[in-house]
Every structure is written in C-alpha cells, then in structure tokens.
Image (cartoon, rainbow, N blue to C red; front, side, top):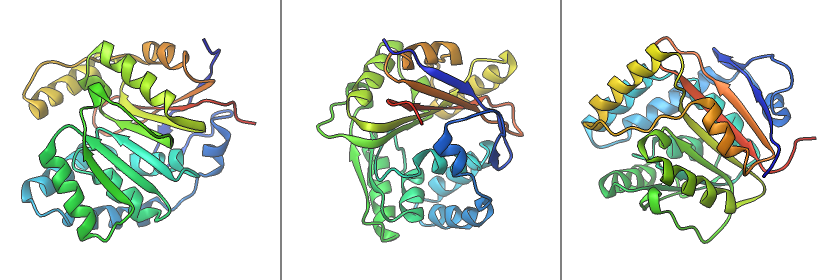
Length: 252
C-alpha cells in the first residue's frame, strides 16, 4: 500500500486557491483565460443535432459551475493520450480535443445512442483526435496505457465493488507519470447530498446511487497512488462537487 500525500484545495471562481502547495504542475498552469473558452463550449453544444441534447447540455451547465472546464484542463495539462470513462454524449471530449489538437482522446460509454451522437458531433466539428466506443465501464477491459484517465460524475452511478475494480483497472493502465482524474460528489454537508440525490433521481429515473465521501475515496485511492489531491468546487447551487487528482509518482 502506498502512503499518499494528500492536500485539499477549495476552488472558488476561476482559479485554484492559493492554499499551500497544491499539485505543483497544476498550480503552475493556472491562468486567466477561462472566459474565452465559454464560447468554444457553446459552439460545441450547438453542434449536436438533437434539440433535447442541446437543451440537456445547456441545462447541465446552468446547474454545474462551468469553471469545471478550466479545472479539468489544468488537470490534463501536459497529457496527450486521454481516456474518458463514462463519456456520455462526448461533450467534454469534444471540448478538450478542440482546445488541444495534440490530445488523442478515447471516450467510453455503455449507451450506444450516446456514443453514436458523440462520434457524429466530433466528425461534424472536424475533430479527428476524438474517438468514441461503446463499452460497459463496470466490466472495463483495457489493452493499452494512457497519460490520463478521467471519470466525470460516473462513480456514484456504479456499485461499490465495481468502483474498486474500475479504479484498479485504470491504475494498471496509466503510464508511469499518468494521472487519474475523478470528478464526483461529496457526501457532506447533508443538505447538499440530499439536493444531489433528488437531481440524480430525476435525471436517471432510478434510485440506485452509491455515494462515497472524501475520506472513503481517499482511502481507496491511496492504495494505488503516491499523491492524491482533492479540489472541492464551490457553486451557486447546493451541489457538492469534488475533483480528485491522483498521480503515481510524487511531484518534485
């Protein structure tokens, strides 16, 4: 078992907090160019053929702080071979591929309709560096390694055993200096997780969610990574976002 270095850094607004020593590479990549990227994101949303998908994407980023895009871009800085587990309609994938043409991106999702729409939108945007595949993330099998693997709002939709298996699989298929990036929800405070549960019930039309708190996630991630940084994200709605940035080797 690794002894992981861990730091928690609240994120408010458009930059990482000036809290002591977050992941050094991520901290050094902070810049003030967030506003110019919102237009790119809007253009990608408008490229979807389905009106329902366009409305869903716009609604999602009314609910979720759009500055998550900037935060994830910092986490991906310097990484070119990227796997997105649970990519949905490919919104994030298309965004990051448009932002950085050097990225070689693969997106996995178990819904074939979403994968079809994601690939069609990427082709419409001319994003040759984005590929999408239909895969069940609960039974994920990988045959190559990645510089970064990200899972965005996926973990609370799969059971505890599948969480452990998925994290183990992803860890085994990261390059030596690879990063695992998880965005999920925290379980505190209680009123925020209650709000999140209500939204999830509406969006998934089901009641099966498996929420883990920060401590529980950290205990599992520390078994695989030398460094685990956590970044709670403030929002105008009571939604307890949190990003886990995990690295196999210690930063110098």
